[in-house]
Length: 494
Ligand code: FRU
Image (cartoon, rainbow, N blue to C red; front, side):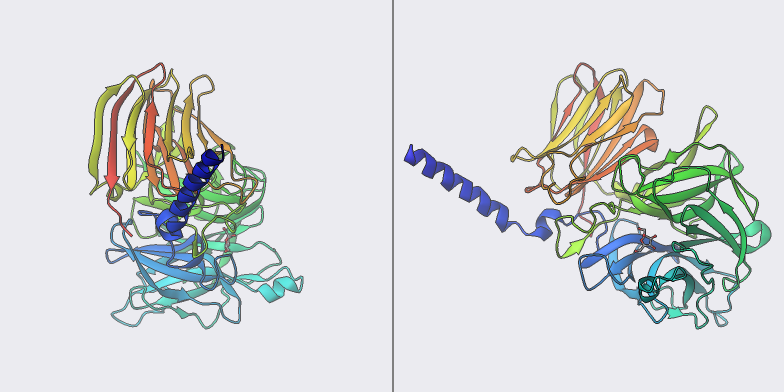
């Protein structure tokens, strides 16, 4: 008996050692998702495409792995997947720390920041005066500008900030600016507590309040943040989309992203109907907005976390990753408009096919080696599961329930979950498509799963923290059949 206990202890210690010898970096740092080099990150900011380069700025506290005084971190990429870290772009100043915002290419030099021969990139952001907030004031968030005349490398703050003062609204932030060509003016959408305010400007410096949207429409379980108003083309027609992030109040608790589809006349946005639509049903895609200056192509990136537990997730040297950049498309389901999202094409452009099967009728194991994209088609009248796991019995389970017409992701046993009571759970999302065949695309990294169904109609993003990397995914067609099953290994692209 004693010997048996010693034996057990010996093997237990071996497995402890094995766990401890793996660094946080090896175990949790994603391979194909953007993370800051160190310390805290939240919202993506100021995304702008210029001279063949995608710029990504982000909410960053460089001195700590929890939220604090916000700076704009900066990274650049040519393909939206491989990122190069750049020096911090914007630092706090006497007007406050630098909250979320956007950036535009001022091609016509409307603001006058560029000298002859130069083009200015202009960043528009919220300045958060933490001292003013402490004093109990309600006007501590204002909007300011900075510009770059060296293609985004260095940034100079406008010396007459703020360009929009606070009218006395505590939550007054996250300006997203676009050029409205029909009336040759800039349009800003700005989150103000429970609504989106629209402003216009000829020169980015002087702003006129135009209208307000949202008080009696959409989800209102929390504060409205990070809006994005932009036109999309649908069969030769211009249709407007307004993205509104919300915290809390998302379908699976905490932070989430809703959107509205409608018309915009240069002054006012009007939704076609009062439906509440969600861009992503998983808990871990927040504050997403789109790149500016990409023409008709609309690319969104989100912060892959949730304010419920973002400050507690079990990494120490850095915190949080971004989602895979996603291309947005407008589609119609009967009379209803929907926004779909799918990973940008460059994600799989250089992948190696590791598994291909025309059809399976029983459970099939896909070996994981690094980041993987799994695709297949399933019969919508039957249920199926995909279980990704390690040899510690830690797993994350994707399932489809044909009775409820519902997808789910179960991360209750995914690994470390105890750091927050709301982390472990089963998350669900409705299926909207009526087709008999469901198209599935799963993007797996070390600590995240992104599920795209029906060409991006229902999307779910979940993060997880196993004590050992998941080794296999088991695709189980249950009573049905799964076809066109394939797995692609995406080379590490940091
Ligand atoms: C959204 C948000 C924004 C704000 C920023 C602060 O996650 O709360 O509204 O500008 O984060 O870091």
